[in-house]
Image (tube, rainbow, N blue to C red; front, side, top):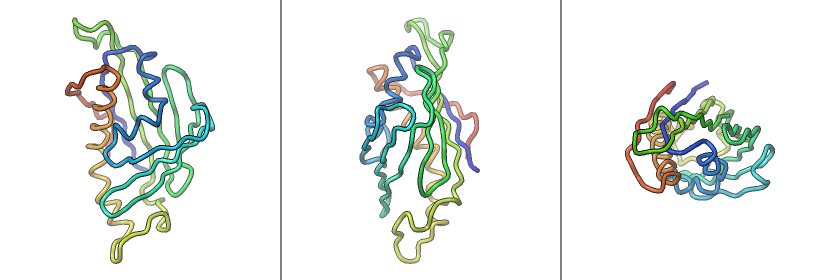
Length: 173
C-alpha cells in the first residue's frame, strides 16, 4: 500500500474550511486532470461521486463513496471500483499558525492510502503496447505535485485570494 499524507495551513476556522471539502463538485477547479464530478446523495455517508479524469491519452471515471463525516473536522471516502483506495480530508484548529494579520488558522490534511497494483487492467482502455504498470510508474511521481496544486487552489478558494502555501509532507511516495 502507498500512502500520501500532506497538510498546509489555511487562514480560516475549521467551520469555514469544511464546506469547501464537502462540496466535491468544486474539485475540478482544483485538480488539472479532473474534468467533472457527478453526485448521487446529500454529501453524507453513502453519497457516491463519479469523478471523470483525463490524462495523456487516458480517461477514466473513478467511483467514490463518502464513508464518514464529522462536521467540521473530517470527511472520509473510499473508491468503490477498480482500485483499492481510501482517504480522508481532516481539518484541525491551529490558531497559533495564523500570522498577526489573520484572525485564526487551521491545518488542512489530505490523506490517501491505496494499492496501485490493485488497479484493474480492464478499467482503462490502454493504447497498444502500454501496460498498466507503465501508467502507474508515470502517475506515481506526479501525485505529490497534484496534491500541492489541489491544496493551493483549495486554500485560494477558501481565503478568497491566491498565495503560495507551504506543503508539509508527513508521508509520501
